[in-house]
Amino acid sequence: MRIEKSISFEELKKLFLQNYQEALNAFYVSQRESFFSWSKRKFQLDENTAADVYQDAILALYNAVLENRVDHVKSTPEAYLFGIARNILLKKASRDAKMQYVDDFSDNFSWMMDDDLTQKHQNQEVKDRINLALSKLKENCREIIKLYYYHRYNNESIAETLGYDNTDVVKARKYQCMKELKKIFI
Image 1 (cartoon, helix red, strand yellow):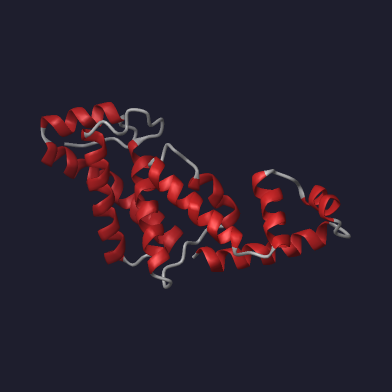
Image 2 (spheres, one colour; image 1 turned 180 degrees about the vertical axis):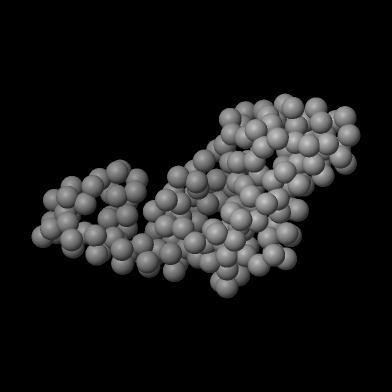
């Protein structure tokens, strides 16, 4: 059996119900190479860790499909699988300071809130962690981050609002604040 990457959740569920072992194995094989490439690039994982996470994510996806927890999901099974893996890896990263997520933190706010790739309780957990980390920052850092990431102010608007001399000062402060937030968050 061969499964195309563009398969829908509905088609995948039918295959799982017809012959779950063969379908699960075929889906596993169809996603494996791209998953290992992604996990190495984003998380710098070794083969064994990537394999463990991949197997856990595949089983979570399988259960979600059979339990009809993906009916509302608009993404592909591949994207959903990677979202599950990302959540597993981020939980692991919070426990294991050796693993590092290689991505710009400023891009992370969007995936943290993406309901298509994560479950709602996990979203709330991440939001709570962000809020806790933000509360540990100094007030001026908290303001810069909130204005930029939550209210979408540009650097010029932040400089005007907070009374900084120019946008270079804002950029430097934002960088320092994000660096501090990363330390607290991870």
